[in-house]
Length: 268
Image (cartoon, rainbow, N blue to C red; front, side, top):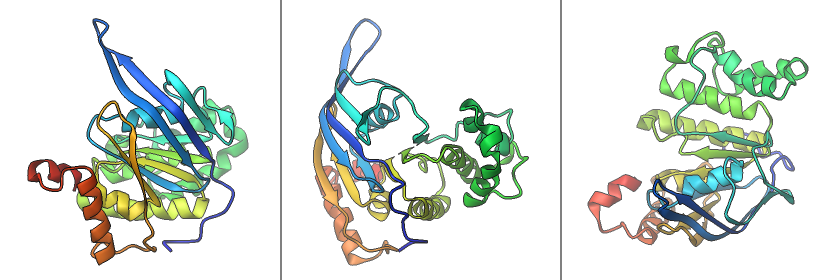
C-alpha cells in the first residue's frame, strides 16, 4: 500500500438515487445534463468519475457538494439528505481558488473562521501545513507559490475541516506531468492516512486507473452511468504493469476513443 493503512470509520457513505439536473440558458433553452444517475459510494472508498467532456461529471460533483440542487432524485451522506454545502464534504477545484490577499496560513484557516471555531481548532493548522508539505511557506501569498504548491494549499484548506468526503474536480489538470504524478502520490497518502471517502472527476484515464478503487464511466450528455469498473490492482501501482495497461486500454475503448487519435489524446 502507498503510505500508511487507511483509518477505518472516517469516511462517509454517499448515496445518489435517481438524480437528474437541467440547466436553462438565456432565452429559456433547457439543457439536460444528468438523467437518472444512481450510485452508492462506500465509506473510505476512492471513486473516479470519467466520461466525455461536458457530460456532467463536475455537475454531479457540485450536487454532492451541495452547491447545486437536483431537479429530481436524492443525494445523501450517511443517511442524511444533502440540501446544501457542509463542512463534512470538502471540495477542491481544478484551479486553486485561493484568496490572493491572504497568506497560505490564512487561506487554510478560512474554513475554521467561517465555522467560528478558529480559536478552538487553530492548533491543528500547522499539522495540515506539514501534511501537504508547505512548511516554511505559511506567510507566503498565492502569487509567490508554484502551481503545485498553490494546489497543496487548496487541499489543506479543504482538509482542515476534517471532511468525511473529499470531492476533487480535476484538481491536478493544470499541473505539468511530473508535478501531477507527485501530487497523485501525495493525494493517495493523505487519503489512506485519513480514511476519507474520495470522489474525483478526471479526464485522464491513466490517473483514474492509478488512483481509484472504482471507475464510474459516464455517457455523453444527458449523462447516465454506463459502467462501473472495479480496479483490483494492488498498491503501489506500476504504470507499466501489463494489467494496468490492459485496464487502461479497455476503459479507452469503453469511451469509444481508442481508434481516434485526435480524441484519444484528450484522455491520456
